[in-house]
Length: 232
Image (cartoon, rainbow, N blue to C red; front, side, top):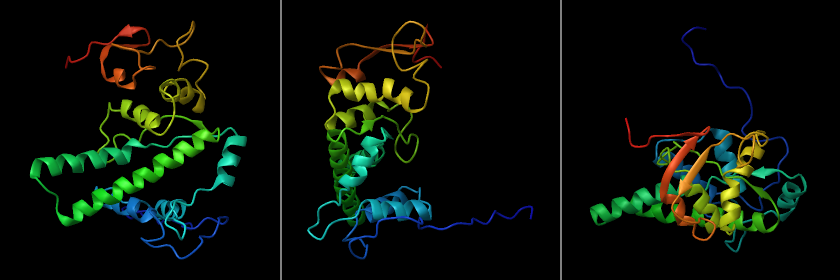
């Protein structure tokens, strides 16, 4: 009826899934930290997203992350693309750190959130490292402007992939050629070669030797035309 929100129909739990090793809670899955973090920043997850986080970030009885090599092997064999979106959590961590420096300390709840978020990020970074070592194809994408991830900070995503073990060159390719290939536009974008769109970022240094050179932007070209930056 007009004016009434549509009723969602479906199931939170997928028909096929690997059962957890034990009952999931805050001690047995770091997915609860992700769910709590999303609520803290005002972006609560959908029920199916919360279910996925809790099961995907399950911990073993010894407290280590339950990494699924069998699924990683299938991803690698299928030549699937994985977009880790690591910086979305790091952005929230940075905001909490800034608040701590500004105020001198955080409230007990926020201090606990900061610790939880850092542990959850460590889990993600380690998973990306292991997937990369297993040959899974990586692409750099972002959740910007979700949460504290401001538009225009995509360079952080490339930096995070480098921190997860990709070489500087591979991390840059993940945000350019691989990103284009993963969405089916590799024939026209993502690489500097004749016949492609000339979207170019000019930096003052060699980011394949030092990734932080990506922050030293000298010029930006979009479709071959120089963009005037800093002009409203």
